[in-house]
Image (tube, rainbow, N blue to C red; front, top):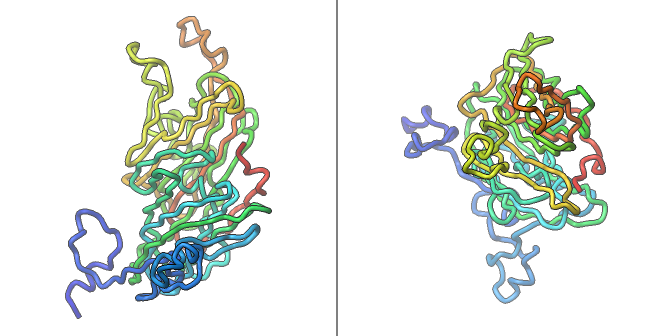
Length: 380
């Protein structure tokens, strides 16, 4: 046996260990190789590209995509060897992204560890393109969804996509790159859960996550925030209730834009008179405001925002329980303060907030709350 076999299993790849040898086996699932088997790619004689390849034949892009019929659940991947998914690329055509539900199952679990509308999983919750350039999620022209979350499993992995549209067929191009390898005992399982509160009750909260049981660590947040009032909307604090926390959390943020690593309303003009006052989009390795949908005065009549924050260098660790919520908070009499900060008062907002929480934990994980029906999830 080679002496590197027990040192590196091919997971946790970075620039620092990119030169290390491993016995991990590279595999890839796509419409051209639905099983990921070695030497079985590009063999299709039937598929969505058959007509275009009619003069060329087998091996010439005969099956570049799949078609998911209305109401159908399609297995994007069904892997029966230990290893880890390392990268996913996907683009969808024909169906709204919240009508496509992405689910992932690890090691024979009957309930999903990931259950998220497709667009929200890739930081595009508003059915509009947003360029995202981060370490673990990137969205590139045009609607090319990519994720680089490492997703290990010890026995098997199953990834499905449901088409909830009752009439329209979904056309999906995708590729799932993974390795067959042994997984270390200390590796936990990837999870992601979607929630939407529309509207947030007056003086209420949006709960991102609760009912989690097991040991793990929270690694990221995406939020699609629709504002139902005028003025600034991001004074609310995000709170992480860890293990024995009850009324008060261990981790309490100082404001919504602060949590997403921005400041002062995401408005450069608010602190620099040389700049016009406006929300400023940004997308970075660990956090971003990649999407600002501005009212047009006619049909796009509301402000909408998409934001992400990845806890890659600062994961939030819990031993057996975790709850996460956020306040929706603005200002009363916005713009009419007379310069006296002490005269201002907060305004509890009744906004439309959807979120995706990302975390790793031990199995078994508790079943998620039932995902709302497609009418409730719809974005107009």
